[in-house]
Image (spheres, rainbow over the protein chains, first blue to last red):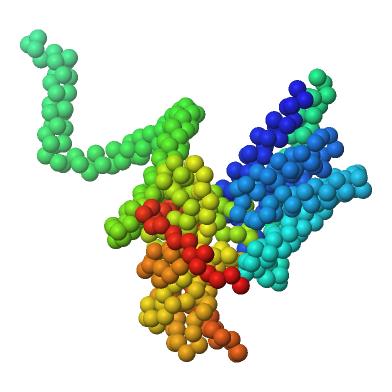
Length: 169
Length: 279
């Protein structure tokens, strides 16, 4: 029964992953698009009852790195950074989880964007800081903030349903 | 004289009166009298009939509303079914149009063998321009194969597994394609960008490149087959102290709405990297 949360997470991760590649990657604002996986991971890691969040962060990072064309396991680095931000905030703003979620979404998206630009530049891609910020990073941050609330609500609800089940057993 | 008793006389008079009235009526002499007497009757009949019908309708309408509601529900369900069928037919029509268009491309370029594939996903990171297709090594897709659609060049296979492949679009910021400007008869490099826009680089300063010039693949470098349509020149930029001109290119392919692609099967990309001197 301890496995139930992990099975639920794995199923949700697959669903979110499919949604991201098929639907959300096509929703663009200038050149930015929302990162549903990042938001899902942030919401999950902010949940106090969710255990082994770092393990799932690594698993998610590896999965996305395997599919994405980003170099040097960039998604893994970005998600680990986001996880560290979320755990830091969880201890400081634990009373208002939705505020923590918005902050993690904002900072995590910015961190991800900057990591991607740095790694793309190392990979000699034609990417400029100004253009990246204007056309990709800031629009992506805005879209992530738009989707933050529904994702947080869904993940919190699911986590609330599966963890009491574990405690009862 | 029994025949002429008062009763018989009354009967005979009555018959004669009736016969006379009939003769007068048939001959039309009584028409004004009939009109005068029948018009009020007809008016009364009409008034009564209207009221009766109103009262009957009032009493029978609830039954009809129920019936009408049932009929309405049936019709609504039929409309829903027809709308569903219409959407399905439109989807099939769209797929058929894509297939026909791809078939046309295959017919006009018979020198190549193609593998048709459906686009099933897009790159997660917005910094990169990649698509994921549903064909892999099991279907004969190999790394480096060029990918086209009916309008022109799309990209090349960047990574491949058994049942899927990742295509690097020519709009990606790390993509470089050697192209040939048909009207100016010069070669240049087509580069992608972060926003998915295409631009030409390495155009010699002395060459005249005009908006509308057709951009084709040159085949140099061995990554793409020659003479595949890429787009048209939008505008040129000639910066001071620059060694080359640059130009914006309007791609012929709408990269945001690609649903199906053709992979050029019998084109082998040539790896010339060992021939490039190390810097």
